[in-house]
Structures are given as C-alpha cells and as structure tokens.
Length: 507
Image (tube, rainbow, N blue to C red; front, side):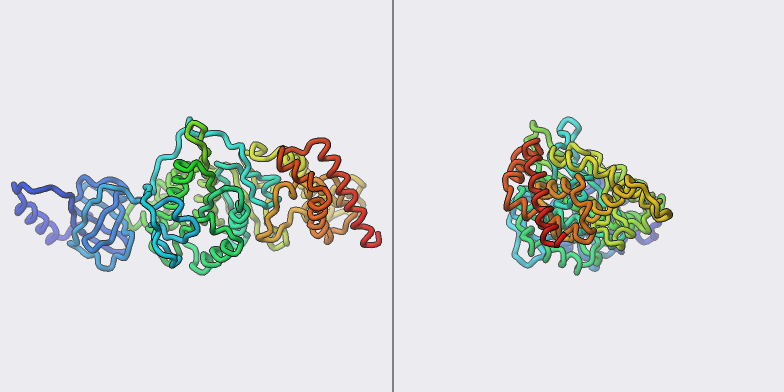
C-alpha cells in the first residue's frame, strides 16, 4: 500500500520515542486511512480475523483484512469522525449479538439494537455471529415435515425440519409471500421463526411486520432488519446475526426454528462492495473469490440435531432474486448447489394467474417424501405425473381439435388440478384439509365441474367434511395415514357433497 513520506516519518519517530520503554502492553493501533465505511489501521499486530475493534470515539469495527503492515477493518457505525491518527483498541472478542427469548416479538437491527420502540432488550445471553456448523455425526436425517400451508409445496416439494430449501425467481413473483405464509402457518406448531431482511426497502419491511402482527405471528417471530439505506457492513452481518439467534433456540432450548433470508442476492452484492473497498482481488462478475464460502458457511449451520445433542433444528428458506429467469448466473448456481432443493417461481405463470407461480418441472425437494405424512404421500403421488402429462398434451392440443377420449380426460383433469393448486396469499391450509382436497382432485371427482367452480367447490368441501365427518380429519391428524376405513368414509363424504352441489345448481 502507498504511504506518504510524512506518514513514514511519524511512524519512525513514534517507534524511536517508545524504544526501550517498559510499559503495560495493550494492543492499540492508529488509523492510517478511512473512508467509505473502511478503515486501514497500523499497529494491531496480534489482531484476529473477524475481531471487534473499538475506535476512541466509541464506534466499533470488524477486522477483515490482515495484511503484512496493516489491518483492513469495516465500520459497524457512523464513520464520519474517524480520521487519520484516531486510536483503535482490540477488544479480544468477535462480533456478538444478544440472543434468547427476550427477542421474540421484536424488530432488531443486525447488532441486536431494537428498532420497534418497545424499550431495551433485557438479556444476558450473547452469541458470536460466526459459529462452526454441526458436524456430520451431530446431525440427524430430515424426517419431520415443516408444513408451509401452501398445497402446491406441501404436496409436491415438501420441506422438512432441518432442511434448506431455496426460493428462487424474478422480482415480483411472490417469493417473500411464500416465506411469510410459511411463518404464519407455524402458529400453534411450536416453531420459532426469524425473518432476516437484507437490503430491503424500509416500507416493505414495515408492511411485512404489520402483516405478521395482524395474523398473530409476531408472538413467535424475530425480525432482523437491515434496510437498503444502511451500510454494506450491516447488511453483510445481518444473516449471520439472525442465524446466531436461531442457534440459541436450537442448541440450548432444543426447539425447531424456521429462518428466512430475504434475500441472499443483495447480501452477496453488499459483500462485493465491502471486498472491493478492502481491495480484495475481484473474480467472476466482480465478486471476490470466497463468495461461495460466504453462503455455504451460513447455510450449513442449518441442521436437525441428533438425539444425543438433544434434538432441535434450524430450517432455512434462503431467497434468491434472478434476472430474466437466469438460474445459471453466478450467485443462483452457487446457492442452488448448497441447498437441499429449490422452489422455482416463474413470471409467466404469475401473470397467467397461477399463484403461487410454481414451476413444478424445475422445482424439487431433495428430501422428498421423507418429509411428508403417509396420507399426503398417497394422495400427492400421482399429482406430479398428471401435471407433467397435462403440460405435454396441452401443447399438442393447441394444434388439433379431434382428440381421443384419453387425451381429453387428461386435459380436463389437468385443468382442474391446476385450478385446485391456486391459493390466495395469507390463506394457508391444514395438512388434513389438503389431503381431502387433493384426494377429490386426483380421483377425478371434479371432472364434470366447470373450471371456474373448482375453487369454491374445494372450499365448501373442506367445510362439509369438517362438520359432517370430523373423524376423517381426526384420524389423519392422529395417525398421519389415510387407512382403508378413513378412505371409504372420505369417498362417501365427497360423493354426498358432490350430489348436493349438483342438485343445488340444478344439474
């Protein structure tokens, strides 16, 4: 790095003055250069990577570059007063955040400072934002479902507790909506939720908090907010801070936690800005060489702990925004390779009225049926194949009108299946109700209904079964299975309701 002659002479003079003087040693350095949220410090020879440094005016920073003659440090606060010559002291500890139950229902920034005006957070527990991921032997395979309440996902792309499922798609395709619906659906299921907003508009975050309060979800949720106007450093530490809060519940309280990172594209951009300011060599798309490690060390901390470790899990829903549907870009491919599957949302489907705008062909869960109850496995088994056949036949049906009965039936059923999978925002469904609706759809009970009646039919069917045959839901909830006796009862209930429905419409 280029030093001016007067800087070199002042350093030599300082060393001559202090030569041979025996004093109490404390690691103190001096700022050589500051600006753009970065400070270069001379004199902290024993500084550790990621260590918290304190400037004489009370601002904190984090050491990220350990060079031969100086330390590159990113600032975690307002750096206006940090100028050349300001003293910097080592703290001997890494960046930590407050954790524990005191944070539930609160909105905090990535340093754990409350933003909701509800007073201070009273906790004596702190955790470092960087923490090693559990080893292979400390983990247990994913087998308990985490219900999102969204039928298309719970039936075809099931998410299990301890899984990392990527939500990927262009802007305005409903990525955040899926994550918020999943948080709302955890009410009463003993799952703690953490929503980490990275580089979002402050108005968007406020809207999400209002929605969570409206549905009573803030009681079990922590919101970690780093808005677009904040420094790149604060956006960079946000997901790690959220993960540290989740780890406290997993390791010490042995609870199940759901954490949403919204979104990791903006996180990578913030890290790129920091890295370039620290003069690290740029790589592909100007990202630094360790941008894969940036996300892998974060997402690997999500796990389901083994019984020896006391159980508990962290389920991660990272979100990635693509440009013009390009999933082969640098950051999307990186995160796809780290996660256990992806939910791919498409703009064309969204504008065609298919919401959630899920591309069933490109979406996958690498945990698969292991994270589903047996009843759901039974009814959802033929769903993917039927939809795939429908998509294939729908292309050819555009060209020819004389279709055979088999093709016509497949097209009629496919249309009704797609209509069944449409679901408005904030209207999550219990898994027992999903089983009832999907059973009717996959077993061709909707074939004679007009497409526009399908959704109202399904809504009324759920109410009818709930009132007339409550034992169906009870059996599915208790055993997780759809046994022969319950299935016969369900067939009878659907048949009765279908007759009533047609009679009321004079058919």
